[in-house]
Length: 380
Image (cartoon, rainbow, N blue to C red; front, side, top):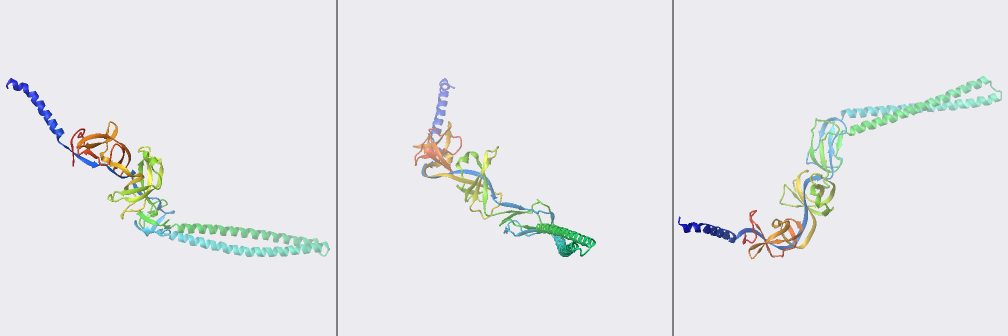
């Protein structure tokens, strides 16, 4: 290689590199671009949760027994007081009949003892009259002292008879009371074989079928009231100060993401999870999808503030540089960094309180990591 070529090799290489860099930098960089707009913006707090019923109950028996009937299935509507299931009641019905017979016998005994009491009182009245008459005759020496003693003995015997009759009647009355309580208990047990709906609502789960043995506490059915359904959503505790009951909300079920259903905040939880630092917000659902289930997942978007006339940009165009929020603005097709102050945020938009004007073009690279500073850009 001639000596002069060796001397020119490095300058030529550097010139080629510089030319390549110039070519790359001068070629427009494809970017996503959006015009800065003025319009309404809604600030929302987002949470994820599940659809729940405010009022729900598990139907289970108070006594043990074999299920004779289960009259409803999951998905069935129910009314308060409706018979949902029944235990075999033969044994309890027999116990009621025995208790009724015992009560009737006790009442007959009371009637007999009442008659005996009346007889004893009549005997006592006669003995008392005879004793007083004999005492009067003795005072006039018309009869002897022995006659008076006989009258006194008859009086005391009759008095004791009244006491015995009253005691027997009292005991018979107590037996009636005991028999009546026993009958009430057996009737209650018989009624407990009938499992009734506690409120108007819907059966959401059936656990057992006829023939199964049910014991107290074992579930047979799960039922809910349809009066109030809500999404119990976990929300970051940093948003607690923005929320209060009755705020409007959008509810998006994962089974139907294309539609948002109306809702309102019903109540705020008073305990945060110590691990996730989230708390529960119950959002009452005003309307539901055609098909839904308790426990299905949904996202809630709670509106806590809004502005009807603000400068806004899409959320995905906001970037950070040295800890400062900002955007890339295309000025005469050249990307320039612009720091901004943001306000409300929601529904994919951010309010720009300072730093942008309506009509300006905000850009972002189509691929992550491509530098834009001072480069020519071409919206796609």
